[in-house]
Length: 375
Ligand SMILES: [Zn+2]
Image (cartoon, rainbow, N blue to C red; front, side, top):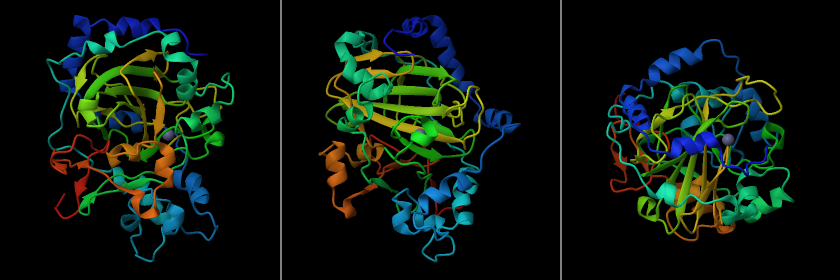
């Protein structure tokens, strides 16, 4: 279905009712462990190593070298035997041990008396105002002409950027990179974000202060349950309006549309919601992971479709580019950076709630542990 018409249920959500505020207050009761236990039962899952390893092992020698790993993060941590390669067993650790015991010691839970941002209603415009081009760039609907080329011109291209976590941090890294060819997996030409595998229930964090602009629940599409935040230039320190999207959640956030969230606030538990591409049912077979996407706009205006948010003059960004926090911001420039500048120093929040660096306005969407401290 082409998302030209405003969804009535979303419109209803936009009224800041008492019910929404009461719902947000329930966030204080949020228990990711309970969700985790419940959702782990009875799910058939494809083996993510068997699924991804052959694609990464480009020369087919049965092991992945540093170049083949392509800056997905944590190469040295994953290469447990220090032989310079990630083998299948070592890669399995990314989907096994990495997500275990990932508990927040001081979680920032949704505020029981939340602040609402009236500008999300003021800035909400109709589809003609944002234009069909923006709709096509974000949705990549096959009805759009040359949609892959259009999205690519708007920044959806492989940049080669990757995360470089603080030296003593143990963070969840990336398996599926930005704009990698994805047709066989999703039916869309290129991957519109990065995927970070994590165990069921691992708390997903708001990467910056922002406002909830959409909550999407459609089990018959690829992203499943998702939330989209809008961040003003003041929220991120960057000279444009940023949208961050978090998908495949096990449960939607309890925060209401229009509610302000703080950097590091828990949005909900990691899951694997969304259908397998090409499947007619809501069969859950992907590994649990967050799909994290970033796009941006020079101004605050946006149109809300049924499944997407469409900012005016929208551009895609490799999420790593957001953490770079300096110009140039466009994907072509990111792609053209010299190799040594493509490993992006990612600011993080630790499970105890402290951040590195201390004064950051942005963090990775999952908390990190310190490798030099007992767990
Ligand atoms: Zn993804």
